[in-house]
Structure formats: structure tokens, C-alpha cells
Length: 161
Ligand SMILES: [Zn+2]
Ligand SMILES: [Zn+2]
Image (tube, rainbow, N blue to C red):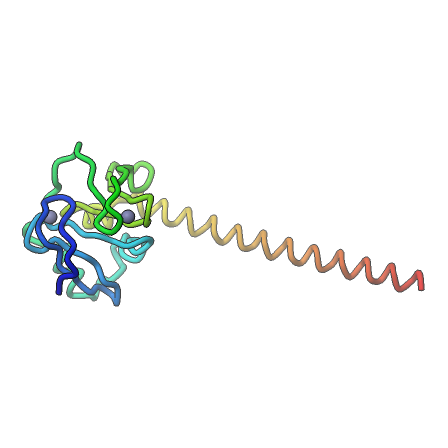
């Protein structure tokens, strides 16, 4: 199955691989790179994720996996614009190519494995989770406070009647 995308790193045709019900574009016959649509990588960036998925295990052990040379900017396979290279998570030391047009992400061969084994990625994910929980707690607190205020106001109004 090939939707006609070519590898942004080595130019070979990409293959579609279904991992945990997600379709990824993979450079199986070339450099071992993987294309993720926006936000898809979050499902696979920790070691325990997709651990029982045979396709994912095969991708991680892809014999052709190699990190392509840095320097040259990759072009997004979906929108054709130049991608930006940045560190995947602060302190990870792993640089990935991201498209600011569609949010797609390109990993060179071997980078998914490196990300999954990277302690900075795990720590950053955990911190994000804590922050998300704190944020939703604040939102709930604020909603409760407003409701109490509203009820107090209603009680005052009743007194005036
Ligand atoms: Zn390739
Ligand atoms: Zn794009």
C-alpha cells in the first residue's frame, strides 16, 4: 500500500504501516524513517506504548534504520513546505523535523527507538501530565467558586424582595 509519498530523507517511496490502529508512513525499503501526522507520535513515544504491537516492534528493530545526515532541511510530504528542526523534548538531545503547516513530524531511522529510551522525554511527558491535571483542577475550582458566588448573590437578592 502506497499513497504516493516519497521519503523526505532518502527519496524512496514510503509504505503505509498500521501501528496500534494508526496509519504511519514508513521508509521500509530505505532509511527506516517514519512519518507521523499531527500528535500521532505522542501515542508511541514511551517504551510501554504499543509494546505488544508486532508492527511497531518490527519498525523499532528495522535493520535499515539509520540516522540520515543533518543539515539539509526536510520537506513536508503532505504540504511541501520546509520543515523546522527542533529538539523533541528539552534536554533529550534528539532533533526531529516538524511541519508547522500541518503539524506532521518526521523521524529519521532509529530516532523513534532513541526517543522511547530517552529519560528526558519520559520526564517531560510526566511533567506535562501533572501540569494538565493541575490545570483541570484549577478550572474546576474556578467553576465552583463562581457557582458559590452566584448562589450567594441569589440569596442576597431574595432578601431584598
Ligand atoms: Zn528514506
Ligand atoms: Zn506539512
